[in-house]
Amino acid sequence: MTAKTLTWSSVWNGRGLFETRELVTIGLFSAAAKASSLMLALMGGGMNPLTMILKSAVQSALLVVLMAKVPKTGTLTLSNAIGMLLSFLLMGQHVMSLPVVLLGTILVELLALPFGGLARRAWLAIPMIAISELLVRVINVGVSYLGVREQPGLLVMVLMVSAFSYLGILLGLFGGLKMAKELKHAGLIQN
Amino acid sequence: MRALSRIDHYRGAGRLSLRAETRLMMTAVASISSLVLSDPQALALLLSFSALYAVAETKPKTLLIAYLFMAVMCSVALFCVWLLGFVFPIIRESSLSMAISPFLRLAVTMNAILPLALNSRLTDLAMALGRLHLPGLVRLPLMVTIRFIPTILNDMIQLREAVGIRFRGRKGFLFWLSHPFTWWRVFFQPLIVRLIRSADELAMAAELKGLEPNTEFGGSPLPFSTHDRATMLLAALAMVLSGLAQILVGAHAGR
Image 1 (tube, each protein chain N blue to C red):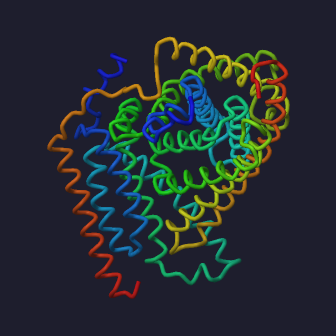
Image 2: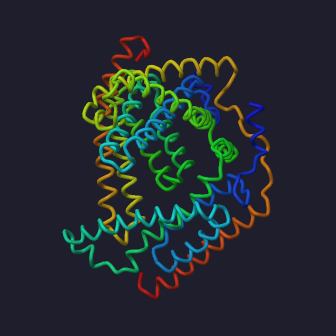
Image 3: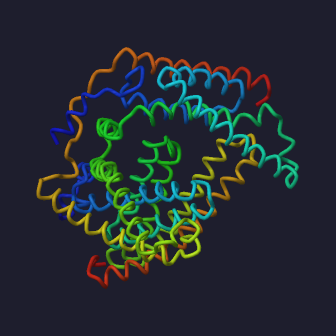
């Protein structure tokens, strides 16, 4: 699609930015992220630190592979939006943080553009995920502070959970990178 | 898409049979109001209204279990805060009335979430989001995600069984915790390969069927029932009264 036909209305309706096959892939990877976190929570308990690290590692590895499969500006934002909307529908989470997180992720994607974007430099996926996930956690801690502002001691629990999950994200990035290389070698992804 | 659009005629389960839009709105109103309010009396007023909504929409037994679970979680959190008070004395200086505000907020949010989570079908919620003018860019992946979570869970169970046969006698959570790289190699990598193949096949099928990002999934919207209107009125009344309580009582107490 040329830039001439790319209007605000077409972008809003999902035409121009992504093709159907790419949107289906993003949806399927979001489903895998949610299903794996459900599975791991059932296996090891949701609040177990090791399970938290493992859940986040799987989530970020899936994101790395997804961004290698669909190397376009907007993939990260869309994947985050789907995950958060699903959490909202399933558990009513992220009502307050969703708009701020989306704005933050869009900003991260725009910052990657001067470096050539994902299509040209696939390695940009790693800093993009690391920064956006850090941003998500900072915003979540901020929103949690609003909820427990009368008893700030409760925030220590939120900080610990965020720290464990971010450690998992960083570990998952390396696992995802290794896997993306193997998948490229096997011809399953092109980027 | 005809079969999907038929689902639009389904009204949500629960005693009041509310529309999914009403439940979504109640969750958003409860989350935002409870964050804005800080006075315990105002939050208690909001809690009483949200409890009315939860009692009207949820089975008493389910509500009781949820409250018991929340009580246990709050007790653990309070115990941790008490322990932290030895390290940071400033935590012990906060008054009891202010210390209960976070738990009141949690209870308000839980009262709003329970009817949404227990009585609404996911497809119904996704269609409600479509009717609320969610962009087509988000609608299609969201529908795929909702549809494929059970399928992928089933795939994972099959993979776990295959791994169980391969490592017979050594399976169990502790074994996998001590061998994370083996777990990654035998469980996660086959899952990714399977996922990529499924994504390619599904994308091809979607394109061959002419599915586009702006395909409409929802049918014509149903009019709001008396229950929907009454619930919205209750939410507005709760917001106004608790806001007034926050202004009057909070100002009197200097909060």
